[in-house]
Length: 364
Ligand SMILES: [Zn+2]
Image 1 (tube, protein in one colour):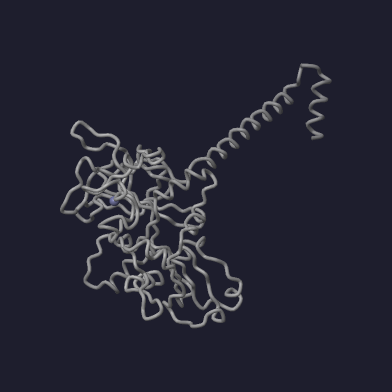
Image 2: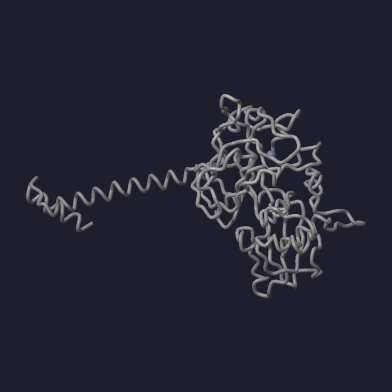
Protein backbone atom coordinates (compact mmCIF):
# COMPACT_ATOMS: atom_id res chain seq x y z
CA UNK A 1 0.00 0.00 0.00
CA UNK A 2 2.84 2.35 0.92
CA UNK A 3 4.49 1.74 -2.44
CA UNK A 4 1.30 2.52 -4.29
CA UNK A 5 0.97 5.74 -2.27
CA UNK A 6 4.50 6.71 -3.25
CA UNK A 7 3.73 6.23 -6.91
CA UNK A 8 0.66 8.45 -6.62
CA UNK A 9 2.64 11.12 -4.80
CA UNK A 10 5.34 11.02 -7.43
CA UNK A 11 2.77 11.25 -10.19
CA UNK A 12 1.09 14.18 -8.47
CA UNK A 13 4.44 15.97 -8.09
CA UNK A 14 5.05 15.85 -11.79
CA UNK A 15 1.51 16.75 -12.75
CA UNK A 16 0.07 14.77 -15.69
CA UNK A 17 3.47 14.21 -17.14
CA UNK A 18 4.03 10.74 -15.65
CA UNK A 19 7.64 9.56 -16.18
CA UNK A 20 7.95 6.54 -18.51
CA UNK A 21 9.05 3.93 -15.93
CA UNK A 22 6.01 4.80 -13.80
CA UNK A 23 3.72 4.66 -16.86
CA UNK A 24 5.14 1.16 -17.38
CA UNK A 25 4.28 0.26 -13.79
CA UNK A 26 0.70 1.46 -14.28
CA UNK A 27 0.45 -0.43 -17.56
CA UNK A 28 1.73 -3.60 -15.87
CA UNK A 29 -0.68 -3.11 -12.98
CA UNK A 30 -3.53 -2.62 -15.49
CA UNK A 31 -2.56 -5.80 -17.36
CA UNK A 32 -2.40 -7.69 -14.07
CA UNK A 33 -5.86 -6.42 -13.12
CA UNK A 34 -7.31 -7.52 -16.49
CA UNK A 35 -5.59 -10.90 -16.09
CA UNK A 36 -7.00 -11.28 -12.59
CA UNK A 37 -10.52 -10.40 -13.75
CA UNK A 38 -10.29 -12.81 -16.71
CA UNK A 39 -8.92 -15.67 -14.61
CA UNK A 40 -11.50 -15.13 -11.86
CA UNK A 41 -14.20 -15.12 -14.50
CA UNK A 42 -12.94 -18.33 -16.12
CA UNK A 43 -12.64 -19.98 -12.70
CA UNK A 44 -16.23 -18.92 -12.05
CA UNK A 45 -17.42 -20.29 -15.40
CA UNK A 46 -15.52 -23.56 -14.77
CA UNK A 47 -17.33 -23.78 -11.44
CA UNK A 48 -20.64 -23.17 -13.15
CA UNK A 49 -19.99 -25.61 -16.01
CA UNK A 50 -21.81 -28.87 -15.30
CA UNK A 51 -19.63 -31.80 -14.28
CA UNK A 52 -21.32 -33.86 -17.02
CA UNK A 53 -22.80 -32.51 -20.25
CA UNK A 54 -25.39 -34.31 -22.34
CA UNK A 55 -23.76 -36.43 -25.06
CA UNK A 56 -26.07 -35.53 -27.99
CA UNK A 57 -28.10 -32.45 -29.10
CA UNK A 58 -31.21 -33.99 -27.44
CA UNK A 59 -31.99 -31.84 -24.37
CA UNK A 60 -35.69 -32.76 -23.98
CA UNK A 61 -34.87 -34.40 -20.62
CA UNK A 62 -34.88 -30.91 -19.08
CA UNK A 63 -38.21 -29.87 -20.61
CA UNK A 64 -41.44 -30.57 -18.70
CA UNK A 65 -43.03 -33.66 -20.22
CA UNK A 66 -40.06 -34.07 -22.58
CA UNK A 67 -39.30 -37.67 -21.58
CA UNK A 68 -41.08 -39.19 -24.59
CA UNK A 69 -38.87 -37.08 -26.88
CA UNK A 70 -35.72 -38.01 -24.97
CA UNK A 71 -35.94 -41.74 -24.24
CA UNK A 72 -36.13 -44.33 -27.03
CA UNK A 73 -38.53 -47.10 -25.95
CA UNK A 74 -38.08 -50.76 -26.85
CA UNK A 75 -40.23 -51.99 -29.76
CA UNK A 76 -43.94 -51.70 -28.90
CA UNK A 77 -43.34 -50.19 -25.44
CA UNK A 78 -43.44 -46.69 -23.94
CA UNK A 79 -40.52 -44.37 -23.05
CA UNK A 80 -39.90 -45.76 -19.51
CA UNK A 81 -38.46 -48.89 -21.20
CA UNK A 82 -35.60 -46.65 -22.40
CA UNK A 83 -34.68 -45.59 -18.86
CA UNK A 84 -32.28 -47.22 -16.38
CA UNK A 85 -32.92 -50.19 -14.08
CA UNK A 86 -35.34 -53.12 -14.00
CA UNK A 87 -37.43 -51.68 -16.84
CA UNK A 88 -37.46 -54.57 -19.33
CA UNK A 89 -39.57 -57.75 -19.58
CA UNK A 90 -42.01 -56.69 -16.83
CA UNK A 91 -39.20 -55.70 -14.48
CA UNK A 92 -37.29 -58.97 -14.73
CA UNK A 93 -34.61 -57.62 -17.05
CA UNK A 94 -32.06 -54.92 -16.38
CA UNK A 95 -31.26 -52.00 -18.68
CA UNK A 96 -27.93 -50.71 -17.44
CA UNK A 97 -28.02 -47.33 -19.22
CA UNK A 98 -30.40 -44.92 -20.92
CA UNK A 99 -31.42 -44.86 -24.59
CA UNK A 100 -31.32 -41.29 -25.96
CA UNK A 101 -33.42 -40.70 -29.10
CA UNK A 102 -31.89 -39.17 -32.24
CA UNK A 103 -32.85 -35.58 -33.13
CA UNK A 104 -31.70 -35.31 -36.74
CA UNK A 105 -31.49 -37.51 -39.86
CA UNK A 106 -30.13 -37.47 -43.38
CA UNK A 107 -32.28 -37.91 -46.51
CA UNK A 108 -32.39 -41.68 -46.07
CA UNK A 109 -33.71 -41.27 -42.52
CA UNK A 110 -30.45 -42.35 -40.89
CA UNK A 111 -29.58 -40.53 -37.65
CA UNK A 112 -26.80 -37.92 -37.89
CA UNK A 113 -26.57 -36.68 -34.27
CA UNK A 114 -22.98 -36.12 -33.16
CA UNK A 115 -22.09 -38.02 -29.97
CA UNK A 116 -19.69 -36.08 -27.75
CA UNK A 117 -17.78 -36.76 -24.53
CA UNK A 118 -19.78 -35.77 -21.44
CA UNK A 119 -16.62 -34.67 -19.57
CA UNK A 120 -12.83 -34.57 -19.94
CA UNK A 121 -11.33 -38.04 -19.82
CA UNK A 122 -9.30 -40.67 -21.59
CA UNK A 123 -10.44 -43.43 -23.93
CA UNK A 124 -10.03 -46.83 -22.25
CA UNK A 125 -11.88 -49.13 -24.65
CA UNK A 126 -13.11 -49.08 -28.24
CA UNK A 127 -15.11 -51.90 -29.82
CA UNK A 128 -14.79 -51.59 -33.59
CA UNK A 129 -16.40 -54.93 -34.43
CA UNK A 130 -20.15 -54.53 -34.32
CA UNK A 131 -20.68 -58.29 -34.48
CA UNK A 132 -18.93 -58.78 -31.13
CA UNK A 133 -21.53 -57.01 -29.00
CA UNK A 134 -25.19 -56.21 -28.63
CA UNK A 135 -23.81 -52.66 -28.06
CA UNK A 136 -22.47 -52.66 -31.65
CA UNK A 137 -19.67 -50.13 -32.10
CA UNK A 138 -18.96 -48.52 -28.76
CA UNK A 139 -16.46 -46.40 -26.86
CA UNK A 140 -15.63 -46.25 -23.14
CA UNK A 141 -14.15 -43.06 -21.65
CA UNK A 142 -12.65 -42.87 -18.15
CA UNK A 143 -13.15 -39.82 -15.94
CA UNK A 144 -11.31 -39.23 -12.71
CA UNK A 145 -13.14 -36.92 -10.39
CA UNK A 146 -13.24 -36.24 -6.64
CA UNK A 147 -11.78 -39.59 -5.49
CA UNK A 148 -13.78 -41.65 -7.96
CA UNK A 149 -12.96 -43.38 -11.23
CA UNK A 150 -16.09 -43.50 -13.36
CA UNK A 151 -16.55 -44.45 -17.00
CA UNK A 152 -19.02 -43.34 -19.64
CA UNK A 153 -19.98 -45.78 -22.39
CA UNK A 154 -21.41 -44.72 -25.78
CA UNK A 155 -23.04 -47.58 -27.69
CA UNK A 156 -24.72 -48.41 -31.04
CA UNK A 157 -22.52 -45.82 -32.81
CA UNK A 158 -22.65 -45.64 -36.62
CA UNK A 159 -19.03 -44.45 -36.79
CA UNK A 160 -16.26 -43.74 -34.31
CA UNK A 161 -14.74 -40.24 -34.31
CA UNK A 162 -11.25 -39.48 -35.64
CA UNK A 163 -8.46 -40.00 -33.11
CA UNK A 164 -10.74 -41.90 -30.73
CA UNK A 165 -8.47 -44.77 -29.70
CA UNK A 166 -7.36 -46.33 -26.44
CA UNK A 167 -5.12 -43.94 -24.52
CA UNK A 168 -6.33 -40.78 -26.32
CA UNK A 169 -7.35 -37.83 -24.17
CA UNK A 170 -10.77 -36.39 -24.92
CA UNK A 171 -12.13 -33.04 -23.82
CA UNK A 172 -15.71 -32.44 -22.71
CA UNK A 173 -17.76 -31.88 -25.86
CA UNK A 174 -15.24 -33.59 -28.15
CA UNK A 175 -16.65 -35.82 -30.90
CA UNK A 176 -16.75 -39.53 -29.96
CA UNK A 177 -18.69 -40.71 -33.00
CA UNK A 178 -22.03 -40.55 -34.80
CA UNK A 179 -25.27 -41.84 -33.30
CA UNK A 180 -26.28 -45.06 -35.05
CA UNK A 181 -28.03 -48.41 -34.90
CA UNK A 182 -25.20 -50.96 -34.71
CA UNK A 183 -25.82 -54.14 -32.69
CA UNK A 184 -25.27 -57.88 -33.05
CA UNK A 185 -28.75 -58.87 -31.87
CA UNK A 186 -31.02 -60.79 -34.26
CA UNK A 187 -33.65 -58.04 -34.26
CA UNK A 188 -32.05 -54.83 -35.52
CA UNK A 189 -32.71 -51.31 -34.22
CA UNK A 190 -35.24 -49.63 -36.54
CA UNK A 191 -34.63 -46.08 -37.84
CA UNK A 192 -37.45 -44.63 -35.76
CA UNK A 193 -35.85 -46.05 -32.59
CA UNK A 194 -32.27 -45.01 -33.41
CA UNK A 195 -30.59 -44.00 -30.15
CA UNK A 196 -27.42 -43.60 -28.17
CA UNK A 197 -27.17 -46.12 -25.34
CA UNK A 198 -25.34 -44.21 -22.61
CA UNK A 199 -23.92 -45.68 -19.41
CA UNK A 200 -22.15 -44.25 -16.41
CA UNK A 201 -20.38 -47.19 -14.85
CA UNK A 202 -17.72 -48.36 -12.44
CA UNK A 203 -15.17 -51.01 -13.27
CA UNK A 204 -15.31 -53.57 -10.47
CA UNK A 205 -11.82 -55.00 -10.94
CA UNK A 206 -9.04 -53.94 -13.35
CA UNK A 207 -7.83 -57.59 -13.54
CA UNK A 208 -11.17 -58.94 -14.73
CA UNK A 209 -9.68 -60.93 -17.63
CA UNK A 210 -7.60 -63.02 -15.18
CA UNK A 211 -10.61 -63.55 -12.91
CA UNK A 212 -12.65 -64.63 -15.96
CA UNK A 213 -10.00 -67.12 -17.10
CA UNK A 214 -10.04 -68.69 -13.62
CA UNK A 215 -13.76 -68.58 -12.78
CA UNK A 216 -15.50 -68.73 -16.17
CA UNK A 217 -13.53 -71.50 -17.77
CA UNK A 218 -14.54 -72.12 -21.39
CA UNK A 219 -16.66 -68.96 -21.64
CA UNK A 220 -15.60 -66.44 -24.30
CA UNK A 221 -14.41 -63.03 -23.15
CA UNK A 222 -14.36 -60.73 -26.16
CA UNK A 223 -13.88 -57.47 -24.26
CA UNK A 224 -11.11 -58.23 -21.76
CA UNK A 225 -11.35 -56.12 -18.61
CA UNK A 226 -14.38 -54.33 -20.11
CA UNK A 227 -16.65 -57.38 -19.99
CA UNK A 228 -20.16 -56.26 -18.98
CA UNK A 229 -20.01 -58.50 -15.90
CA UNK A 230 -17.24 -56.22 -14.60
CA UNK A 231 -19.23 -52.98 -15.00
CA UNK A 232 -21.72 -51.58 -12.50
CA UNK A 233 -23.91 -48.73 -13.66
CA UNK A 234 -25.43 -45.72 -11.96
CA UNK A 235 -28.62 -44.09 -13.26
CA UNK A 236 -27.68 -41.42 -15.85
CA UNK A 237 -31.18 -39.87 -15.84
CA UNK A 238 -31.17 -39.35 -12.07
CA UNK A 239 -27.60 -38.06 -12.28
CA UNK A 240 -28.45 -35.41 -14.90
CA UNK A 241 -31.61 -34.31 -13.06
CA UNK A 242 -29.78 -33.97 -9.74
CA UNK A 243 -27.00 -32.03 -11.43
CA UNK A 244 -29.57 -29.78 -13.12
CA UNK A 245 -31.29 -29.19 -9.76
CA UNK A 246 -28.13 -28.43 -7.77
CA UNK A 247 -25.96 -26.72 -10.41
CA UNK A 248 -22.43 -26.13 -9.12
CA UNK A 249 -23.40 -27.65 -5.75
CA UNK A 250 -23.78 -31.09 -7.37
CA UNK A 251 -21.40 -33.56 -5.72
CA UNK A 252 -21.03 -36.92 -7.47
CA UNK A 253 -19.75 -38.77 -4.40
CA UNK A 254 -22.49 -37.42 -2.15
CA UNK A 255 -25.12 -38.26 -4.76
CA UNK A 256 -23.99 -41.88 -5.18
CA UNK A 257 -23.60 -42.40 -1.44
CA UNK A 258 -27.10 -41.06 -0.84
CA UNK A 259 -28.70 -43.81 -2.93
CA UNK A 260 -30.46 -46.42 -0.78
CA UNK A 261 -28.38 -49.44 0.17
CA UNK A 262 -29.81 -52.85 -0.51
CA UNK A 263 -27.49 -54.83 1.77
CA UNK A 264 -24.26 -54.86 3.80
CA UNK A 265 -21.68 -57.59 3.48
CA UNK A 266 -18.46 -58.31 5.37
CA UNK A 267 -15.35 -59.50 3.51
CA UNK A 268 -12.12 -60.54 5.22
CA UNK A 269 -9.91 -58.75 2.71
CA UNK A 270 -8.11 -55.64 3.88
CA UNK A 271 -6.94 -54.44 0.50
CA UNK A 272 -8.57 -54.68 -2.93
CA UNK A 273 -8.43 -52.57 -6.11
CA UNK A 274 -11.85 -50.93 -5.65
CA UNK A 275 -10.78 -48.90 -2.63
CA UNK A 276 -7.69 -47.65 -4.46
CA UNK A 277 -9.66 -46.61 -7.56
CA UNK A 278 -12.45 -45.06 -5.47
CA UNK A 279 -11.04 -43.77 -2.15
CA UNK A 280 -14.07 -41.47 -1.83
CA UNK A 281 -16.18 -44.58 -1.04
CA UNK A 282 -14.06 -45.50 1.98
CA UNK A 283 -15.47 -44.44 5.34
CA UNK A 284 -12.72 -43.69 7.85
CA UNK A 285 -12.68 -45.80 11.01
CA UNK A 286 -10.01 -44.76 13.55
CA UNK A 287 -10.50 -47.93 15.61
CA UNK A 288 -9.62 -50.18 12.66
CA UNK A 289 -6.68 -47.93 11.82
CA UNK A 290 -5.40 -48.30 15.37
CA UNK A 291 -6.07 -52.03 15.91
CA UNK A 292 -5.52 -53.23 12.35
CA UNK A 293 -7.97 -53.86 9.52
CA UNK A 294 -9.50 -57.35 9.74
CA UNK A 295 -11.83 -56.81 6.79
CA UNK A 296 -14.32 -54.45 5.20
CA UNK A 297 -18.01 -53.87 5.75
CA UNK A 298 -19.42 -53.07 2.32
CA UNK A 299 -22.73 -51.39 1.54
CA UNK A 300 -24.13 -52.15 -1.92
CA UNK A 301 -26.80 -50.30 -3.83
CA UNK A 302 -29.26 -52.38 -5.88
CA UNK A 303 -26.87 -52.36 -8.84
CA UNK A 304 -24.11 -53.80 -6.63
CA UNK A 305 -21.99 -50.63 -6.49
CA UNK A 306 -19.89 -50.89 -3.28
CA UNK A 307 -20.73 -47.30 -2.39
CA UNK A 308 -19.54 -47.39 1.21
CA UNK A 309 -16.56 -49.45 2.38
CA UNK A 310 -15.76 -49.33 6.10
CA UNK A 311 -12.60 -50.95 7.44
CA UNK A 312 -13.38 -53.06 10.53
CA UNK A 313 -11.17 -54.13 13.45
CA UNK A 314 -11.50 -57.75 14.61
CA UNK A 315 -12.84 -56.47 17.96
CA UNK A 316 -15.80 -54.83 16.19
CA UNK A 317 -17.06 -58.03 14.57
CA UNK A 318 -19.10 -60.85 16.14
CA UNK A 319 -17.79 -63.28 13.53
CA UNK A 320 -14.80 -62.91 11.24
CA UNK A 321 -16.39 -64.81 8.38
CA UNK A 322 -16.13 -63.60 4.81
CA UNK A 323 -19.27 -62.97 2.74
CA UNK A 324 -21.57 -62.79 5.78
CA UNK A 325 -24.64 -60.62 5.19
CA UNK A 326 -24.87 -58.00 7.95
CA UNK A 327 -28.01 -56.18 6.85
CA UNK A 328 -30.72 -56.32 4.20
CA UNK A 329 -33.07 -53.50 3.21
CA UNK A 330 -36.06 -55.60 2.14
CA UNK A 331 -38.11 -52.65 0.88
CA UNK A 332 -35.30 -51.57 -1.43
CA UNK A 333 -34.69 -55.16 -2.49
CA UNK A 334 -38.31 -55.61 -3.58
CA UNK A 335 -38.11 -52.41 -5.68
CA UNK A 336 -35.55 -54.00 -8.01
CA UNK A 337 -36.62 -57.54 -8.85
CA UNK A 338 -34.00 -57.96 -11.61
CA UNK A 339 -30.94 -57.82 -9.34
CA UNK A 340 -30.58 -60.23 -6.43
CA UNK A 341 -27.33 -60.14 -4.45
CA UNK A 342 -28.90 -61.77 -1.37
CA UNK A 343 -31.38 -64.56 -0.80
CA UNK A 344 -33.34 -65.83 2.22
CA UNK A 345 -31.95 -68.86 4.01
CA UNK A 346 -34.05 -70.04 6.95
CA UNK A 347 -34.57 -66.95 9.14
CA UNK A 348 -31.57 -65.06 7.79
CA UNK A 349 -30.00 -63.85 4.59
CA UNK A 350 -27.04 -65.15 2.63
CA UNK A 351 -25.36 -64.00 -0.56
CA UNK A 352 -26.93 -65.39 -3.74
CA UNK A 353 -24.78 -67.01 -6.45
CA UNK A 354 -24.61 -63.59 -8.14
CA UNK A 355 -23.70 -61.96 -4.80
CA UNK A 356 -20.90 -64.45 -4.15
CA UNK A 357 -19.57 -63.84 -7.65
CA UNK A 358 -19.71 -60.05 -7.12
CA UNK A 359 -17.66 -60.34 -3.91
CA UNK A 360 -15.22 -62.77 -5.54
CA UNK A 361 -14.63 -60.30 -8.35
CA UNK A 362 -14.48 -57.29 -6.02
CA UNK A 363 -11.76 -58.85 -3.85
CA UNK A 364 -9.85 -60.66 -6.63
ZN1 LIG B 1 -29.93 -49.30 -24.18
